[in-house]
Image 1 (cartoon, rainbow, N blue to C red):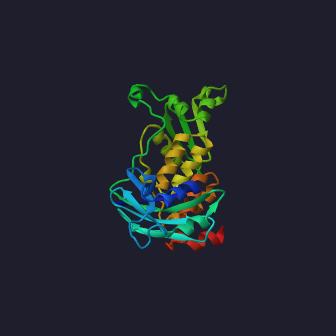
Image 2: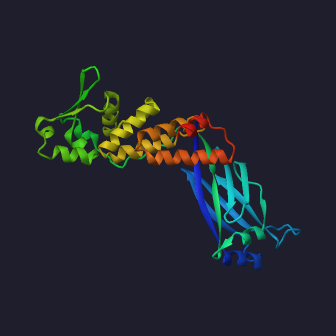
Length: 302
């Protein structure tokens, strides 16, 4: 079983017109809703309106949160911008308890005719397997079975030994505009049908080639190897591979490894999307007092 953490951060705009309609006509319009998608097949819905309880009717609004998705738990904080007020939904798995919110809270948050409600939190999902990551480039590899590989990549190792990988030129051209420009130019690579790579090791290059040919074996690579593979993809502008690695790692961010991933993202200097995802994860954990492994070491060094 795998645990996937999915962070959400969005704003619910409540206009003065909507508030007045709720206040003045509670019988005609009891609820307004905000619907969202946290993850594949995981949906949520916030509802806001008057309660049927006579002792608070007309004085307070009530908010609840419903989750539509199996084996999912949510911890969500609701911030009323312009005030110092915060409310929280804890460990919601289906339908939350209804929270009572004074109308004054909304009116105090009004600015330029609207009240902004910030919704931030984390969905924690148990899954039997990680989601399949779609590919933006699809190749009919069956057409290549009887075509000889016509290009050779030579990887120079630190000890001077060279390792070679045979590939199809057309596969390289489809995957990377850098390879396309190189192989369609008058440079020496298309003339000799070879490319020598000296700044990446064999593990990185073979992982990229396997990806080009449709294999998805990234579970065999550790985080450092994946970040090096991303650096390779960044150098050669392989968008499909960069997008794949970004999603692959983002599905695996957790309190136990987010510090390591964040430090690797900073060191790589080209993995801004993952760096931002890690930072948002840190902020949530700090706000909700969720322990993060090696948290102090990250911010003392950076």
